[in-house]
Length: 288
Image (cartoon, rainbow, N blue to C red):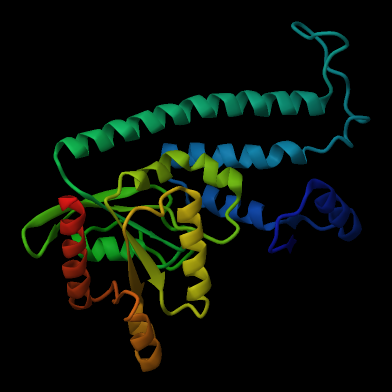
């Protein structure tokens, strides 16, 4: 098995496979495989399947055409279809059905968001690089038990809970799928229904994994994706998480404290300054 940390085109995959006689997986397929393994809800599975099929379509090999029979029969047009043509048609048919299903999902999410709005509850959405600790933060703040594991993309499905701030304000807090650099465009498009949740946010909380040596690069990836998703105009609060893992680096902690709030999602006591700041920001936003 060969894994490449970049996307390969179909020709490259075939050439490397022929030369090495090994199975070749590029970055995109690896991410899709992880997503497929993590998807639990029907919605998540539909979104992952759509992304997988879009990835697969241009990579179907035509080299088997000479070996495959022409398939005619009832309903066939002209001389019939090759196996490759049949495979492509089936994938396109399935993509069309998935598109319809996901439109229904999007409408249902819109109805749920509308019901929330009727209750006049402001929305705070957690965003961040994958494995930054968003789900752990939501669990600690709301005493929930959603899946929170130390691995990539443990959360694919949006989760919403009610959160009461210290000074008599209640909001809806939402956890969404984590971002990653070079996120496949088809995957981003397939998760449109999920990412639409962010459009309803009054305040974004960008959770950063302070223990990761590349946290600055990860911050930029998230900021760039928010820009691409036309979400950059939503007020955003930086939350530097996992401070318990870098307690000895006083210079780092002092540096990032100038940019946002430093916390450990595992320790509720460290979250008090965040709750105060988030409530103050939310109050100003709602007064506009």
